[in-house]
Amino acid sequence: AHTTVGIVGGGPAGLLLARQLHLAGIDCVVLEARDRTYVEHRQRAGILEQGTVDALRACGAADRLDREGLIHDGIELRWNRRSHRIDFPALTGGRRVWVYAQTEVVKDLIALQLTDGPPLLFEAEVTAVTGAETDRPVIHYTHEGIRRTLTCDYVVGCDGFHGVVRSAIPATELRTAERTYPYSWFGILANVPPSCDELIYAHSPRGFALHSMRTPTVSRLYLQVPNGTDPDSWSDTQIWDELQSRFAIDSDWKLTPGPITQRAVLPMRSFVTEPMRYGRVLLAGDAAHIVPPTGAKGLNLAAADVIVLARAFADWTATGTTAGLDAYSGTCLKRVWRAEHFSWFMTTTLHTTPDQSAFDTHLQLSQLDRIASSPHAAAELAENYAGLPVG
Ligand code: FAD
Ligand code: DHB
Image (cartoon, rainbow, N blue to C red; front, side, top):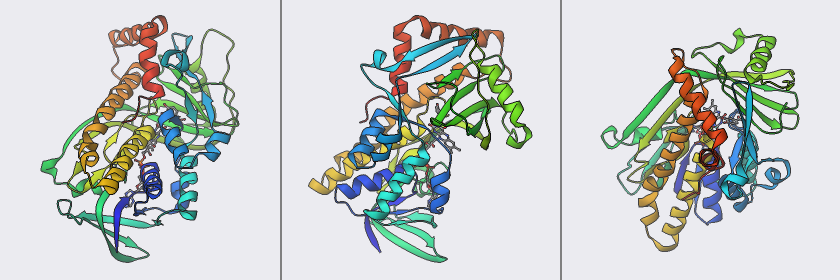
């Protein structure tokens, strides 16, 4: 079999790319290793930037997002038992973000793809991609127990951090830059209305905590914990008590506990692969780069990559030019490194390291005080959080 663009991975990057290519009249196939239920219920990101929302709208995938998504015009920062609000529209010339879970974005894109879209195969595990340097790269995969191949004009690896497409690029052609962090996030989902209207990012002597949400009746919260923490080693009461004490401020604000329906511990990492293209193989999203979650950039970066890539493929099919494809890696990496810096900044400003000194703590608190007292410092945070322009 042959297709123009072979897409490996049916996460947000692969599905959004497929949708955009289909609307541009470009033939493509998506191969996804896991089953539909698994992909639709994998609990991950929750914040969409304007650029991501615009792209979903432009490809007709935003009907439910526009009905059910929660528009947020700011976040709250807490430290030293005080609270400070960052007002996004006021500081960025009108930008805002949407609370709409990655699970819902993926469900909406899959539903569209299955009714009006190019082929999307679940339980199709890609084992290798060969011929990156030829003009007919080949995807090798297994579907329903049968080994198959798909010949393509181009292959796009949207297969996440643990994907296989990156290894189709010779190691001598790739540079990677990486950082790990000495803490993880313990994330819970709870059937209780959020105790806040906007997200709360808290610095505390006991470590970082984040209050997020999924819907008006479902809360999503995170606690900084040591690497290797077993999520089942904490009782529900311990979790709520620890969250309450990390969010505590000098007011009568209270966190309302509720039934916890999911719990997981996530390690944190920064990772960038350069370049994001070799021959006729391109990488997009987590396959090419990872950020620690503080700042909510992962899903939005994945979307930005495929927005740039879809335009490049549209130019190539319309006029035969490869200028956009040739510029893809450089264009994306500029934005990727900005998000890498912002995510590292948010992470290291708000978390406490196991060997934290008084000096380190003073620098963090001084930075947070600066954000609260200078509109310039606040605007720098707001612009990055609400999202820089795509392209
Ligand atoms: P993915 O969503 O990882 O999709 C890759 C797809 O490829 C998967 O469906 C996978 O099954 C498939 N695949 C992999 N290998 C193969 C193969 N060999 N053959 C076929 N298919 C394959 N971001 C935030 O902003 N906030 C968060 O709270 C947050 N939490 C996260 C929690 C976890 C555990 C993880 C891993 C990430 C989290 N992120 C978060 C980041 C965000 O979810 C990712 O940046 C986003 O999912 C990237 O989308 P993607 O399509 O590039 O990759
Ligand atoms: C969520 C995750 C983040 O990393 C973040 O910065 C904000 C919200 C979330 O899962 O809701």
